[in-house]
Image (tube, rainbow, N blue to C red; front, side, top):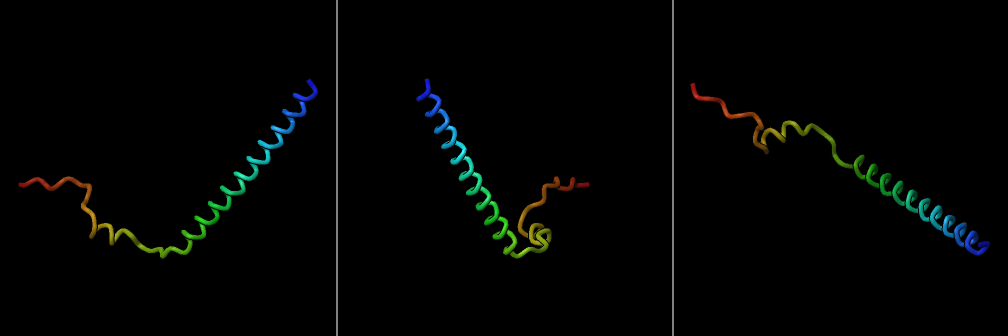
Length: 63
């Protein structure tokens, strides 16, 4: 029984370590995405969108 408790404690420590590494990697990826987004040129998209895509409004009915 004592060996089982040692193995359980070791496995728990491994899982906690893996979870901490996973969180660190995920935070680094999120920070990288945020920095890339901040480097993208921002600006009005509405004008381009109206010229490049069709409207979602229905076509006008003939009178």
